[in-house]
Image (tube, rainbow over all chains, first blue to last red; front, top):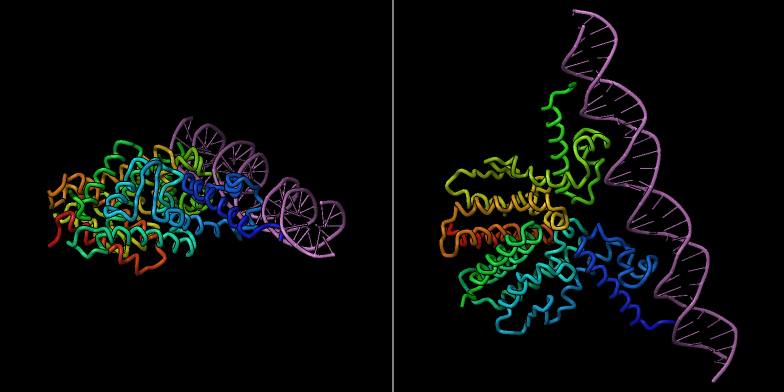
Length: 196
Length: 196
DNA sequence: TGTACATCAGTGAACGCGCGTTCACTGATGTAC
DNA sequence: TGTACATCAGTGAACGCGCGTTCACTGATGTAC
């Protein structure tokens, strides 16, 4: 046993994180295994020591978004404390922030990769669903409104945040993108009953 | 002049529609020019008579979604009459319908291709933005609520519809997908002031 | 009306390139004695 | 402590394949006479 087991776990982690940044920025199909491995400080061939194929890697990269953010999420200076009383407000403010809009590599995978996932294998879809359900659950527990079933409200707020961000990213006009995020934040706050 | 000008316009249209169906189903990168041209009943080489490159075609395919649907939109039996009094309700019902969820080739490009567009050229982004702004404008004029600025409400409803559909598509569980669409429809109806 | 011609939409072989994957090999490591 | 060895993470050349694009050519068409 020439190497400790923990070492290979760390290497695999480096590959997953390199892949995540590249997938987020360029999409699954436009990233090569050479690029992923170079980002992890390795070469091509070693990839198959850790993964059976390129698509096997996909689900793992989706999963690492939540694993990393145990109870703190950060996007270039925007912090979310998931234990706080106003976690719901903090989540949607961070989600719809300019920082998240511009953070290509560290963005939420639901914003960067949803259409890739829609065409991917079932493992990737399950990982994606888990991210969404986690966001919904966190929003639901912080809700301040009972006008609708709480779960439905949380689902709608999450979908609104994700949808706004996706459209803002595909927009050619930065002002229109910011405008959309602001409008969505306003409505989302109201839906959650967080209007001060 | 061996062929009438109208003939080449029809051929170009056939290529664009073939491309649209294929892009919607498989995404930009996974569709080859051979496939597109075969779908239009032609062969590879003729492509460059009509387009300078594969990416030049992209913006045109996004545009054709709106051009086709002048004042009637149909998704496998779900009709929308944009001139009707309740056009707003009709739009969001059609958008969040099971038919739209399952219509891969005829789906709204905002659902099928947003992340591709986010990485595409400016022409594609502008075409995408135009689709979104058109949807927002149509929703705004049908709004029945003045609780928030009308434009902001319309933007949020549109983003909610698009986001729900995208997430539902990437979901592994059909029941959860349908549940999300139902929840979003409920909230969207309320936001528009269309709760009967 | 019939024939020769010019046009250009469309063909399909060919090119170069980059990618996913394989595999014989290397060399750094921990272990056994 | 020092040396020989077994292990296996990592290397990088090689393979086959499919793609975007080019280009010399074809052949159906409308026109001129």
